[in-house]
Length: 109
Length: 112
Image (cartoon, rainbow over the protein chains, first blue to last red):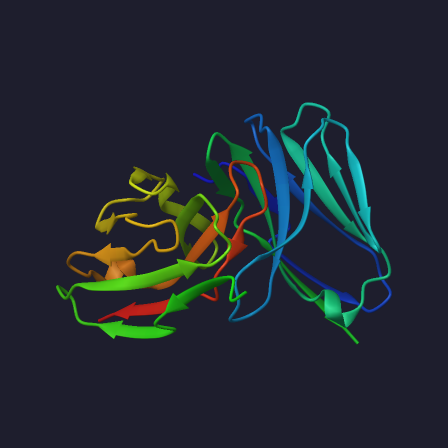
């Protein structure tokens, strides 16, 4: 059983469209991280959110941490082909990170 | 800075064979961990270490051993390979809990 549930599992959109990826859990986390992974490579950190209700923006990417620190979302505005990849959320407690199964995003030119 | 390095990149084993996946980091990170990544299951923690001489089990430790004799190195040993261990293995390091993890490029292991 996955501690963190990500939805949708797959997302294919046209360049210029918006998209949202969700990360939900019944557990409370001290922080939540979002990573992007490209084929044949390891995940790379995009952002860490720590405070309940926190919103962080990274250019066209907006990350939100739920008030209860159990869920998070990633919104991409005007997606570009370079946004294509596997997006992973990870909740941190103690010295362990628990990862969601990931959302595969494909942005078509 | 090489970051986190892993060797080999690819490996094929027969059932019952043993091998060691190598991981090294040059960032002086105290925390290191091993994950396996399987389709539809995300990354699952195998073992982790919070410093030299200290290791602990993660979510899926069975069939794997680790040791941490230096800050830089954190090898993962497969004792007797099984087809269920076919996966992509990632090593990661960080300054500590809840902080950005730096991942290596991965080792793709196939057990036949």
